Amino acid sequence: MTYEDIAGHPALPVCVRAQALAMQQAYQGNPRASSVFATQQRWLMAHIGLALYFRRDPSDYRKELTAARFVDVTVQHAVASRNTAHAFIKEMQHYNFIEVGPAGDDGRIRPLRLPAITLEPLIGWIHMHLGTLDALDGGNRLETFRARPQLLAQLQPLIADGLVSSVPVREPQQTFSLFTWLNNGGVVMDWLISGVDPQNAGQERIPTGVLSIGDFARWLKLSRTHLARKLRDAEALGSVGWLGQRGNSIMWVSNEFYGEYLTAQAVKLAIIDAAFAACTTQAMD
Image (cartoon, rainbow, N blue to C red):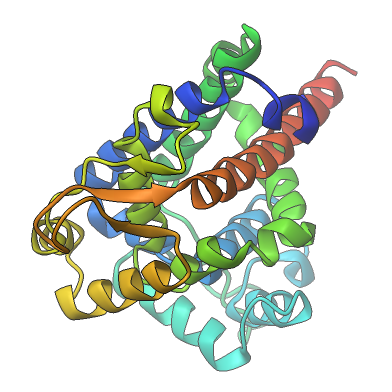
């Protein structure tokens, strides 16, 4: 399905709400793993690292996943600075999402390895998005992927290529971009959208399920002050607001912000579908 197919699909609001709920449940089940994708920048760095891992060649140290290669590729794609990329690698090691393997013939090269547990959140993320695509067109992508889990090694790098090279992904629309730099900003948006009844999607101010900033912040393990500041920034843009007294009534999102979220999901889903089609075609050749 192309971006146009997905963005114009009448079932997109219902399917995206189901996906937002699934993302929310994944966060609740494993907040630490979800924090890897806490901001847009970290999300893209994680995909770059995973792609390098799947494309590595243990017989050629120049094609191994190393901290130096990860930093170089991250900087080449202008995703983050060298210092930020190095800090990300150190954090991933600290939480055991990556391990340093034994040195090769050249003792200076220390390849990085991913424990199987690190791939579980990625597989869950792919399951959710393939399931959304299937719900839109009645396909069997998820069933195919579950039957052939080895496709992961070809699929993820193609997804990463698509995400990193996509201008709409790299430069999201104004309100969406407000949250992409907030820790757990993606979770904030998923939470807001998961509370939207698709039947209300045509309204100018669409009610969500959020009643309290404090409860919202505690659930997300965010500073209430920091979250409130971001929400006020979004409020100043006319993207969110309260149906009654601020902080003590139901929060609404604007029709425009809701549209930005749907657009971002359609862009991402089209990239994932193109990658899935390419790797399944390649596997059949």
